[in-house]
Image 1 (cartoon, rainbow, N blue to C red):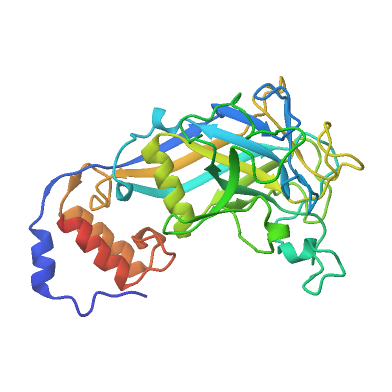
Image 2 (cartoon, rainbow, N blue to C red):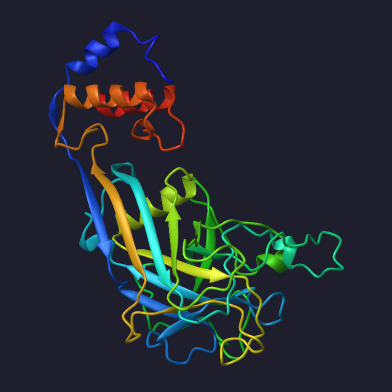
Length: 343
């Protein structure tokens, strides 16, 4: 259990002398529907009007990205969380996305990460058999090309650069990316043929079926985002500062391409969009501390009570004392809190 041994009385006394107004308000944001949802697929000729979105892969099929059918979601978070602040003034407490499965007993539930090696041809020397049935449904951050940005791409914007049909690889205007803590991104659209693993922001889970079972219609898939991951934390902070969060739900469950969204037996998931009359759109919940992080208790003032509350949390090893959000409670959290408290 962490202790405070080794810290000088002078340092503590210096901190206790600080008292002033601050802003560390905790905001709970609930979006019952996205402001934007769109099936990102080259043969989608009614963008923004679909009642369902299929997520599947066209594994190493010439002219198609490996991550082929995708579900783009956008939320105007700036309507409830102040935008334009420095990134360090957004502390992500929790973030949760949900999406509801539309097709009945066709896609198997897989809550585990699958290496791309399990999708290689079995004759490939690096092929690795999948340890469990199905393919995970994953959420990735969004990248943009051809002049489009987070703020300009909408439900009915062009899918990609010319030509769209017949499709071209690596041409879609919004594409899934993996992101690290420095903000560096890598396009994962063709990661099977390019031979690299790159986990996304989250894998979908559900309590209603067991791993390996077929998911019935109405299954709610939940995507929990970990603030402990530096790339996830940075992407969410950037989105809050910009006032908009875009996400891509994808899966590498194989399907053959075509205007109907994959031919042959359908083994991939489809999701309700906000245009569907059933009223089961994707949802988003965010819990965010906004403002001066030195206001540890979020009462609008930076004073002795913040210091005392942090010390209590720190000495008990509470996750609340994980000030730098690296999933460890240690000296670095105390040091970072002191820095924020003294500012």
